[in-house]
Length: 114
Length: 110
Image (cartoon, rainbow over all chains, first blue to last red; front, side, top):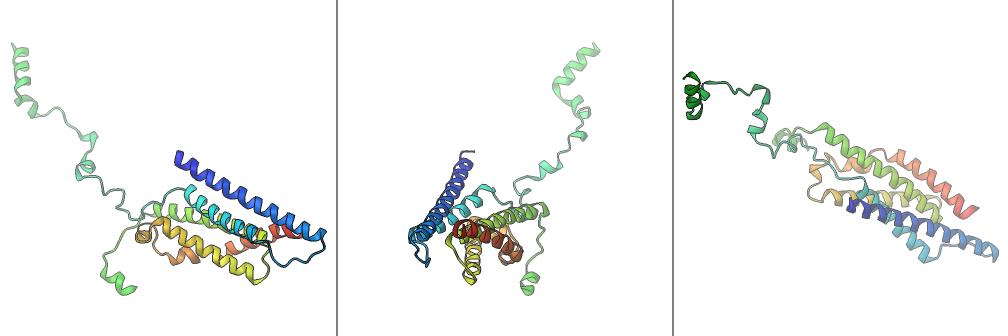
C-alpha cells in the first residue's frame, strides 16, 4: 500500500510539473506577444521540464498499473505438490478396518462389549 | 523462428494471464499517447517534429516497459516484444494528435 502511495505521488508530481511547464510556456508566449517579439523556440528550462515530467509520468503510470502475470499455464501450479491435487475431501473415509485394529479403539470396543 | 519452434517443446499459455498483461500494456500506452501529446503541445512542436516526438516517446515507453518486465525475463510475460511496440500504433497516434492540437491551442494560440 505504501509503495503504491509513493508511485501515486510520483504520478501526481509528474502531472503538476507538466502543468507548470504548460503554464510557463503560456506566460512566455504572452510575454513575447506584449513585447511584439517573434516566437522562435521555447526557453531551455521549460523544454527540459516538460520532457522530464513526461518521463516521470511514464514511470508513474507503469508502476501504478500493477505487476504482470506469468503467461505460462504451469506458472501457478509449479509450487504445488501432487498430494495437493490428489487431495479430495469429499472422498475421505473414516470408517474402515484400520479403526478396528488400532489399540485404543480395540480397548474401547471391548469395554463396550463387556 | 519456425525451426526454433520445431525444436522447442510446445508451451501451454494461460489465456487469462496474457489478457491481463495486454490490458495493462494497452492502458499504459493509451495514457502515454495522451500525455506525450500534451507534452508535444506544450513544447509547441509543429509538423513532422510532432510525429518524430511521438515515435521517440513510444519507443522510450517500450524500453521502459521491457525494463520493468526484465530485460532477460520478458519472455515470461509476453510472447512477442515487437507486437508490444507495433500493435495499435495508429489508434494511439490519433489520441496523440487530439491531445497535441488541443494543448497547442490552449498554450500557444490563445
